[in-house]
Length: 635
Image 1 (tube, helix red, strand yellow):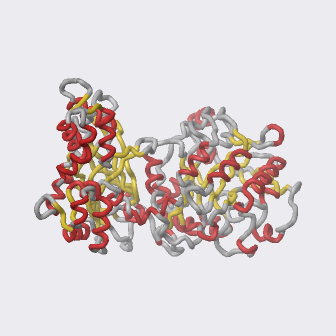
Image 2 (tube, one colour; image 1 turned 30 degrees about the vertical axis):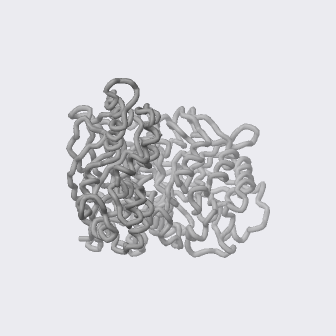
Image 3 (cartoon, one colour; image 1 turned 90 degrees about the vertical axis):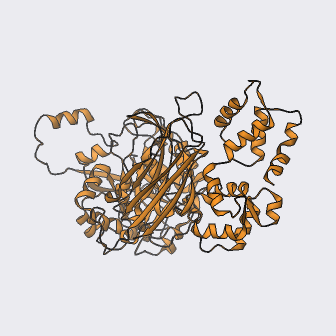
C-alpha cells in the first residue's frame, strides 16, 4: 500500500528516468515532510555516484527514507501496531491515552488525527494509520513539547497588576551597546512584537523644543520622542491585548516635559490612561483585564493620585511642581550610568586608595516636573526605594520602585522574605547595572524568585538570559503577563527561595533524550556533520538549579541517537524553567552552540514529544529538533 502510494506521488517526475537537485527538493515538498536544504544537498551528492547532477528513482527513494523514515519513530510505531504495518483506530486511542498522557481522548479524536495526518486514502477509509501517517503526526504541532493550551491566555487576568510577572525591556531604544551603539525605532517595534509589556524611554531635551530619546552622556545616536510614541502607538497591541507600561527615564526640562505630555495625549488618544477607572479613587491596582488596550505612563509624579483626580478637567499647562529627593548613592551610580557624577574609572581609583570614607549625610536634590506630564501618571508613580520598612510605612499601592541589580541581588540574599512581601504589595522594577556597557544581561530568574514583576532586560542582546525571558513568557498565550504563584501573591507569605518550606509540592521530572533530527551542521564542517551533545538545564530557585549532559555522537548532525535518561527533583515547579541546549563538541574543552529551546516546566507536555530548536538570535531552526519522552509527577 505504501509502495504504491509512494510511486504515485513521484512517477510523473521520473518520466525521463532521472531528476536533478531542484526537482528533488520539489518532490520532497510534495510529501509534506520538513527538510533542511544543507542535509538534502549532501545526501543528494552522496547518492549521485556518477557526479552527473542527477539521480534515479531508487536514489530518490533512499534520500526520502534517510530524511523521513526515522528509525526511532518506526520502532515506536511497531510497538503499537499489531502487524507492524498498520495502526488500527483502537490501538491509536490506546497509544494516545497510555503513551501521550491524553486520558480524555476517544475514537472521535483519533479518527480526526487519521483524517488530518494519514496521506494514503486506502488506509484513511479503513480508519487506519500507516507509518507514513504516524510519522506526520509525531512530527507535527500536535506532538510538540509545549502545551497547546498554554498558547492562549488561560490564567485569571482579573487580579491586581502587582500579582503578575510582566515582560519588560531595558534601554528599549538601543539595538547594540550602551556607549556608541545606534538608537533605533526598531528597538521598540521588535520588543513589542516579542510580547514585551514594559518599554523604557530615556528622554532628554532636544533642539527646537523637541525632546529626543538616547542613552544620556554617551555617543549613542538620538531619535525623536515623537516618532518613538508613533511607533509604539502602531505596534502596542499587535501581539498582546494587555496593558503596556511606558517607563520614562525623564531628564527633560519642564518646558519639554509639556511637549512630551502633548505628544502622549495626541498620538495615543483613547489608549492612554489619564484617570482612574470611572474617575473613582481605587484602593488597589487594577487588573490586566480591566486595562486591555490601555497604555500607562510610569514616571515621577507631583502629589497624590487623589489630588490628580480632584483636578481632572482643569488645564495644567504652564504649571510646574517641585519636590526633593535624596541624591543617588554610589551603589546606584554603579547600577545606572544615566546619572554619572564622575567617571567610573576615577571613582574606582578613589576607592582603591584606602579604606572607604565615613558615610556622609545624603544630599537632597530638587526635581522639577511639568504638571501636564505628572497628571498622566495614574497607576504607576515612580518612587525612590529607601528600604522595605520605609515602603511598608509610607508607600502607596500605586507607587512602584526601580532597584538596580546589585542592590536587588544583595536584598534578595539578605532579606528574601521581606523582598517577597514587598513585591506582593508593590510593582518592582529591576534594571541592569551601568557597567554593562556592552548591553549584557543579568540572570532574571533570581529576581522572579522573589516576585519582582518588571525584570527589565536588554532585548537586543541574545544569550542565556534572553532565552530564559523568551521561554518564560511563551506561557499564557505570549501575552506578556503571567500570574505569579500563590505564595508570591499572599500577604502572609513566608516564602523564601533559599529555604523551601514543606508547603511546596516537589515534582520528579524524567526526560529521556532519544534522538536529534536535522540538527544545524558544525560551523567548521564542510559537510553536514557535527559532533552533537545535549545539555538539559533547570533554572528556578537555587536548590533546583541543575545541569545534565548527554554523551557526544560523533559526525552525525542528521540523525544522532542518544537514548539517555535524565532525572531531576524539582522543589518549586511553578518557578522552574527547562532549557535544552545542543552543542557541537569542537574539542574536549570547547563546544560550539547549535541551538536551544527553553520553556516553563509546567508548560511541558508528557509523552513522546518534539523539541524545536532556535538560534542564538531566536530564529526557529525548523526542521531541527530533538525527540524526547517527558514524564513528571508530584512527589
